[in-house]
Image 1: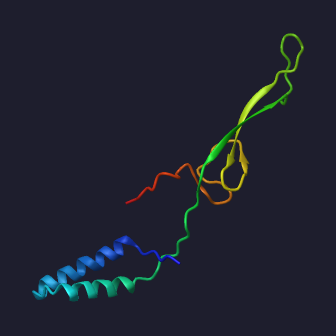
Image 2: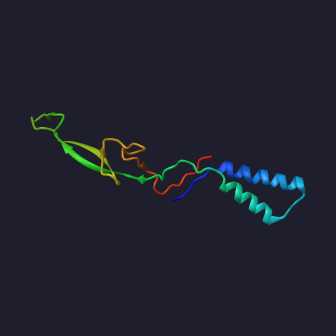
Image 3: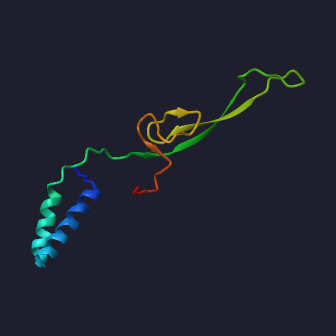
Length: 115
């Protein structure tokens, strides 16, 4: 199972080790790498779950509801679009950022990094 850590915490460890080595005038690369690696291994893993990505697939439907009639007295056929989740198949009337199955919608190709 993959383990995730906070990026800022790992960078803080690197910065601290760098500053400590400068202060001691000790530039032994093996020691620095060993200390950084040990400290990073000591960071507790973050409680995260993998993000599932999906997309809304539009589907066009026709209905006579609400019942309306044209000037000739014929019922008017209405058209509307619904959206179906590509993962679970749930149907919604509008595109939401997440489906009820937990999938993040519309970000399949994008791997955003938030600062």
